[in-house]
Image: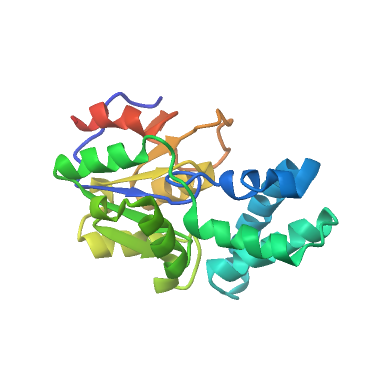
Length: 228
């Protein structure tokens, strides 16, 4: 943990996938259908999803995250020699109703009750985010749900983080940004946000510029640091 307190914060903004929403669920929910390749499929799908977002940003060939997610799933299924169109459709559909981690609803509610602005800043396409937020019933605790589609490039491009600062009308230093993805934390910290790395799995630190202000295992740990 880098600090036991956080300087003045006016808003708390969260990455969606892996931070608020549990990404293991889509494949785990269909593990019986996938069989002994379930873990490998889940891991490869996520890895290619991120790689494709970064590579498309570098190439200037943007498509929305629903397309990226489908392309990544197609690669993963092909690599693991899984040919099942109905399974593919089912896995993609599950992405629209991901469960939150257990502490997420209460943490968001506490932040709102404490007078802080709250929101999501995600690579997800608008329809993906709207569906997930509504299914999880957390929309009353969110002031904004922001998609990279507004700027047409993926994180960690600075334009994505700037969008949040512009929408919230706050300087970056007054925004706390939460992510379970260390590369996202690095990008947001380099931009100027106060960053919180929710390191749920105990991953090693990345060798990148932009260190988190705080490292935690669950989002609940941040509340006392914000005086809540």
